[in-house]
Image 1 (cartoon, rainbow, N blue to C red):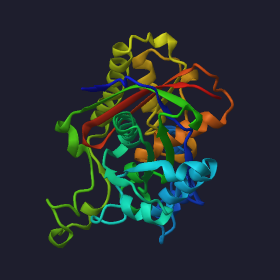
Image 2: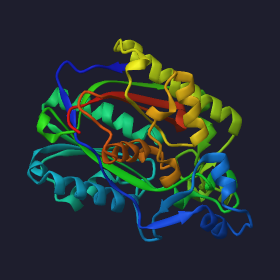
Image 3: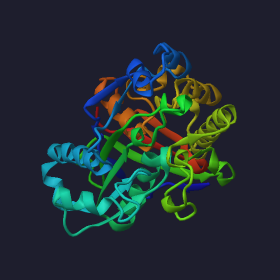
Length: 338
């Protein structure tokens, strides 16, 4: 486990988000798949009622730029201070080049570095951990964007996977200046178990199976295998990671005000808080509105929490996620303004 506890105060703005304009209900997803099943089949099994999908001509850079532009409208004087752009995504515009430089150019950002960070469903929390560490070491403002498009990798023949996923992006600033608002970063932790890396994958398109060698079109779609085992592994990984972080910062679980889990599946989220001993009323739930938006889901859920009027200064919030590659990431943040 890679534990990080900054020695100086690091602040995080409330996220700005982008949700694609097209909302897909469960019934619309089934119609797209060409199957005659009632939409509540998905709701009963996952808690999902709607999700947002991009249009055919939209890419990850488009929704990432939209989220960042909304953020920069809120902080117009901060644009020139940004010295690093981190894009958490596993659905970039191209296999190469990275997508972060494309976003940097479209945003008109200059004199900064940028890179893509691939952590699948743990993207936002991993990006926050990384950006906070960079901020502390460089004394410079970081722009974190977590953006994912899963809809373009869904197969009409795979009901179990296609029922789950949506698209979205979340962006925030990380700085040593408390005036950016929102939250103080207290600590974070990363961990992984590559032995289960093949449970969630897109098998074609990389150096192991280039598209020109791919004889099975199904390998270009997102696949999840060993459903029950995956459920158990994800619940255990997230709960273990969350409890490990709380133990390291000596914070009793009873003193957690909010938990923002990766919005994979409502039943999975409920199992995580049960294992951690946190009541459901402290859990932020957006999976019913957005589905599983992979690496952007924690950022979208944190935005939802900021918007619901329930935050107060001094509240402690645990962000917790796990996903493809057997990755898990957690962060503890504290509200400095409502």
